[in-house]
Length: 263
Image (cartoon, rainbow, N blue to C red; front, top):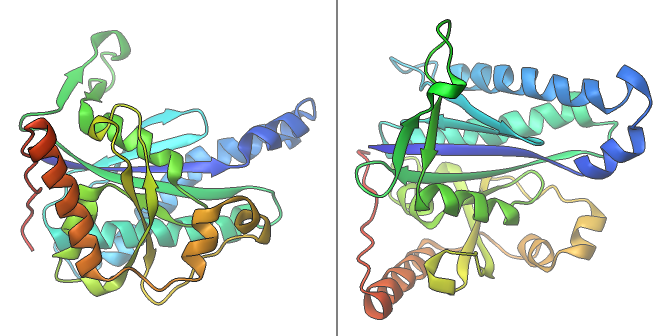
């Protein structure tokens, strides 16, 4: 079973909270209370619109809230569905910023990754966090989950950073043309790929551009390079994925098979 995880985090939240501490309910509390209650509702509404012509809308549910980050989980049924979910997430992030954060020094950034629960990762019911009046509290643990949290460090405002497994699914999806993918660099992720730098892939909705602030470009070489480059061609992305798979097999005896979903 494959699960898709979606993380949305506030950029600039630490400084914002520090500068508004002591101002009562008009300070940072209302801003974050609104985010955690309204953003999931907006995402649900956007998903309903994107899947209006389909028999079912994917059940994207909140898994957990961590600090200023909300993480969703869904069991995708096809590669096309994955692409559409990610497009819906990007559109929700953009619209939330426009409607709720326009006058604030805050942005949203996102990360998305796949986890395989057939072998490598596990689902746990935690009785101590459950109650008789609600569904059991479920947690997810495993190397794919760890990868997602490590990778989210390289998310940037108004973009999604994707795991290699997820990017590979998008590359073969029938609606591949709806997404633009950018290979913006390689970074070492603690505990991932035996220390080999991991390709950082950003996603935008096709026919859109990066929405960075001038100071974002001044402080991030990857952002500066991305805005000056076209989307990465599929051949280069396939090669980056194949190179990592070869490295794992040749150097560490790990055969990392591709995640497969129907079209």
